[in-house]
Amino acid sequence: MARYTGPSCRLCRREGQKLFLKGERCYSTKCAIDKRNYAPGQHGQGRRKLSDYGLQLREKQKAKRFYGVLETQFRQYFNKAARKSGITGENLLVMLETRLDNVVFRMGLASSRKEARQLIRHGHFTINGNKVNIPSLNVSEGDVIKVKENSANSPKFKEVKEAAVNAPGWVSVDFEKLEGKILNYPTREDIDIPIEEHLIVELYSK
Image (cartoon, rainbow, N blue to C red; front, side, top):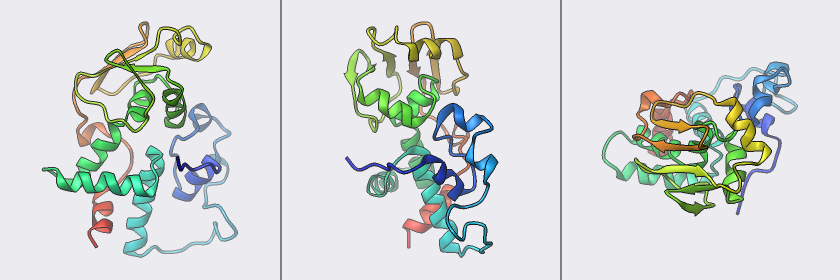
């Protein structure tokens, strides 16, 4: 399966903001944005005014990189969002937000979306008691995501119990049981990533 294998911090520098792709490193003084807050490459420090198309493209790239989705899959999400009733941009963000890898990250069961994808692929989680290893799977209201019993005693998940981070209001998490439940689908107000989704809609509507 195709995936980005280059340096994660380069993506943050290209977008000019933290995408929180490397877990704890993003909150430390080692963060690349704190050290070199300009685009990578020979001309990264040059100033250039973006056209309307350039602004739209940057928003799309930013959304893809936040959620770890490549171009073809992102376009498929957009097409599905456009066919649904409601606001296309918000539909798109809700579909991305309810991917299993993002939900595991939001629940605090992984330190980054990248780590969440790895843990899911290695079979450490179940949904409603059924083993799952597909990070792109979309969850539904009422679904219960839980760490498998034989994985719960690993050092990684012991750290998760101790950290017990705050989860968004559309999920509930029991860190002692290492499980969480989808209370409802997130609204636009619940999605705190800095993306102007209308620019993505304008880009694909051309």
